[in-house]
Structures are given as C-alpha cells and as structure tokens.
Length: 322
Ligand SMILES: N=C(N)NCCCC(=O)O
Ligand SMILES: [Zn+2]
Ligand SMILES: [Zn+2]
Image (cartoon, rainbow, N blue to C red; front, side, top):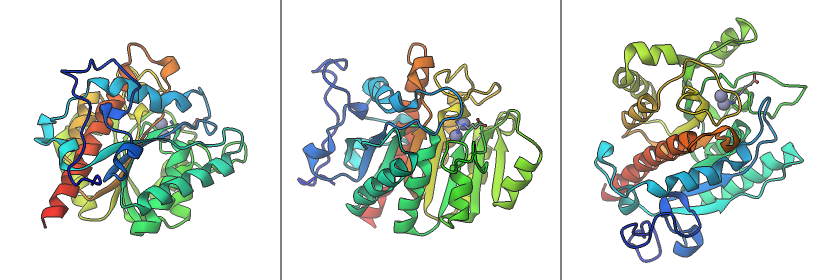
C-alpha cells in the first residue's frame, strides 16, 4: 500500500492522452513516486541466455508501451486491480549483458530487496533465464513454491554449449536446487519438436505435469484451469509465462517461435480461471519486439500481465479484510 494508505492509480486517460509522456506499465505511478507497493512491476532487460533469436532485452519496455491502453476496471475478474492494491512500476534491474552469472546474481539480489519490502513481483522480461533467480528469491521468502509454467518449451534441458544458465534450462536448475514444490509443477502450452523422447522422461522425473497446447484446444480453458487450480490448492504459487506459449499468429515477436500454439483468448481465460490462487509473484518473458508487428505480441503480453496483476491485487485486498 502507498504511504497515504489509498492506492494511487494510473494517469486519467480521459484528461491526459494515453500516448503522452514516458511509459510506465498501465500508466501507473513509478515506485519512487509512491514509496512502497503491494505489487511492483519490474523490467529485466536481459537476453544473453537465448539459443536463437536475440532481442528480449527490449521486451519490458515494449510491454510498457503496449500497456498504455489498459483501463482500470477488469470486467473479466470484476475487479479494479489498481484500486484494490498499490501497483507501481519499479523500473528496470540493471543487469550485466556480458556476464550471465553476474546477471543472475544481480536479479536475485534486486528481487530480494523488493520482496523484502513486502511487495509481490510482476516481472517483465527478458529471456527465460531470469525465472531462475526470481524463483530463488521467492523461495527464500515462501519456501519451495508451486510453479505454473506457460511455454511452448519445457525449459528443463540440462545445458547448452556447457552453459547451465540459459533460457532453456531454468526449471531444471530450480528443481535441482530444491526451490520448487515438486508436488505442484505444470507446463501449459507445450508443443513442437524435442531433442529426443528422453526430454519428456527427464521432465516427468522432475515432477512436471504437462498440459500441451493441443490439450488446451481439446479440453478448453475452463476445464484446464479447474484441474490446475485443484493441483495447486493453497500452496504459494509462481506463474512464469513465456509469451511463445501463444501461437506465432498471436505472438510473432519472440525468439523461439513454434507453430500450433494457444490463442491469446485461451491464455487469458486460463489465467482468469486461476483467480483465488495464492499467486506470490509472476513473470512474462521472451517478448522480442524486433520480430513483432503492430504490437501484436506486446499487447498480448500487457494483457497477460494485467490479468496476473489483477489476481495478485484481489488476493492482497482479500487478505486485508480477513
Ligand atoms: N525458453 C525459450 N523461449 N526457448 C527455449 C528453447 C531452447 C532451444 O533452443 O532448444
Ligand atoms: Zn519458450
Ligand atoms: Zn521459455
């Protein structure tokens, strides 16, 4: 909550044109303007962990730009997320693009500081490498967390070129480090070619359940969300969303696109179906604006972050009245 006790919301777009001024997420105040936040939106401009197209370092600011059109009331969750809790834009973490180990440490330390203030994090990537230090930090606070991972890819591979910290390996590292609650791990939206069948066997051994993008299509968003909610229960939950979980038609601006993905409608509906979960922090990663067109990808990512923020704000407001 802000210092005054009443959340400060976004700039009023009926008085100040929404395209005016520097972009913050959803035109919200900066964190330094409100002092403290219940939900801090944080950019992590890092893409030195990619295996194919680079460019996700520009994702956070592209999402901020595309979020100018978000409005303060979310009818799909019947909530005004920025009135229920103080949401503020904390700017970017300044990470070293030339030293991955150092970047991972910097992200973890910055997340520790922010979580230490009592804020939940809504992180805008960056490539998927950044999920590991964020999970480390969240687990220091909450213990091993349930993980819902939306992605075309498993991201539980071992190494690339001998490197342990890459965008294809964060969740194997997280399992190895014991920072995930292995009774509640799910990938959603996976598809596409793998290196071998062993990839799936390894992944299953780590404890992951899989809802493929074809499963979402066949079962529908509501049923998928119900099943995920049951599996998660009231465990502290981290949601990591690689925007390439969406079909390239819905998210062309990303580094490792795979055909046959979810629609943005399916993703948003599944998220809405997860309202009520104990969402402690979340990320949206892998938006690479150089391959985008007409902000298709960054608009989808901004709405994704909006739904996640709404879940967190509702939870914070509910906890306050209990
Ligand atoms: N996390 C993302 N987006 N992609 C991982 C792809 C790893 C590979 O090149 O096999
Ligand atoms: Zn991916
Ligand atoms: Zn990924």
